Image (cartoon, rainbow, N blue to C red; front, side, top):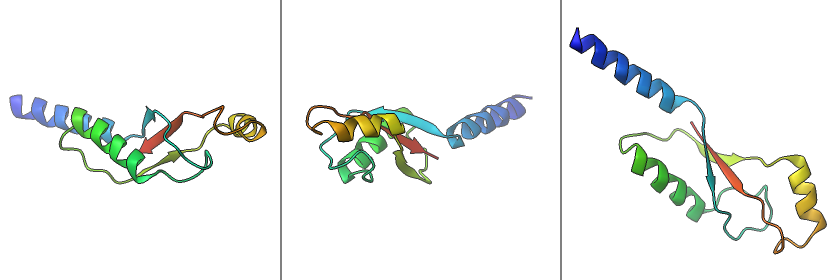
Length: 91
């Protein structure tokens, strides 16, 4: 019975980890909100996730595109004045 419970708990944990996880990170210097993740941003995400889930495997890490209104607002001002929080998707 304990073996079944452990297997179910492991299956549940793996299922939750395989779902899309969105992590907000502090924006670093970048040219445009739709630029791909920088190497620094990638390592920040990796560090945050591996701290909480040390044995997780990454299948994909990429930028979660900001809302169109946020991009238009960003383009209408100086990029140094407004920064858009960058969100990362991990599968």
